[in-house]
Amino acid sequence: MKANLINRIVIILCIASGLFFYSCKKDSSTANANTTSNADLSTAGDDESQVSTETEAVADDANTALNSQVSFSGDASSSVSSTGNVEVNSVGTNQQSSGQFILQGLICDATVTYDTANNQRIITIVYDGTNCRGNRIRTGTVVVTLPYGQHWKDAGATATIDIQQLKITRVRDGKSIIINGSKTITNVSGGLLKDLATLGTITHTITSDGITITFNNGDQRMWHISKQRVFTYNNGIVITTTGTYSDGTDNDIAEWGTNRFGNTFKSLITEPKVFRQDCDFRLTSGQNTVKTDNGTSVITYGLDANGDPTGCPGTGTYYFKLVWTGVNGKTYTVILPY
Image 1 (spheres, helix red, strand yellow):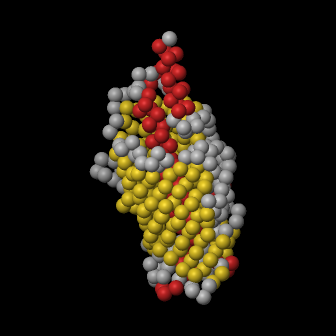
Image 2 (cartoon, rainbow, N blue to C red; image 1 turned 90 degrees about the vertical axis):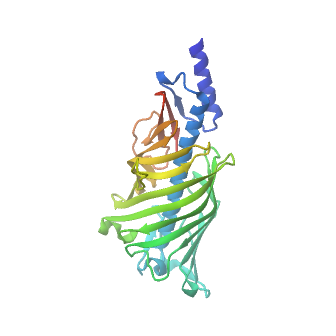
């Protein structure tokens, strides 16, 4: 009877957490774990996945825009595909007398404005709430600034990304986050995406001294970012992401700060996270190890609903498996879609 009661409590918590769990399971050492903490761990793991993916998506949009206009890219033949099936050329832009370039359709849910007046190098991306990818709705503004005299194709070119009230709402469950703050993206190696097949690799870094995340319960927290992204070509663009920060104890830290529950954390990329264009730019593999004072979560990506490595469904559903080990040795396992 006691075992049946515990099983019922775990099932109720999985449903009540509002995360629409496709799988919620425990091993034999989980029975005496604090179930409220378990639900919080699931939420924190889902936060890590959503925030990390969406901040990288902003960097992708900035990179796409920087690649796609000659005044910014430095290459008159600049042309890049933003969705894998739509190619936009800088020739298609409309130049206004103010020095602004208006480009529709480059990023499917936004209007991209290029401003080169008065020696400025400013790109404004305004997200319009269109659910063009079928998985999320974005509203808000991102302003990308490139110093005058630099071109994005140059090795060491650094752009500032200012994120203003960017709200992302996930379609499948309505969970939203709001991002504010700034970060920098540096083209370490130089080169443009249109030349990737010839260049072999392009390396970028992304850093932030602090962005503010507002979670769907209203809590606001500060996160820091330090990542390297290497672009290669294999049947399309492949992006491999690693963490680059060291705190003297751990290396490979990609994000750190405070989670929605007020606990400090650091998230290491312990297996490189890989996004593939031929998989609709989805995260197909990789692993985060998230450390807090009360335990460690290992989050493995690119799985099916059973927690096994999967192929490339593209528009289908991927899952991650979170395995938490507490300081007392107890464990908790959950599988969630992303």
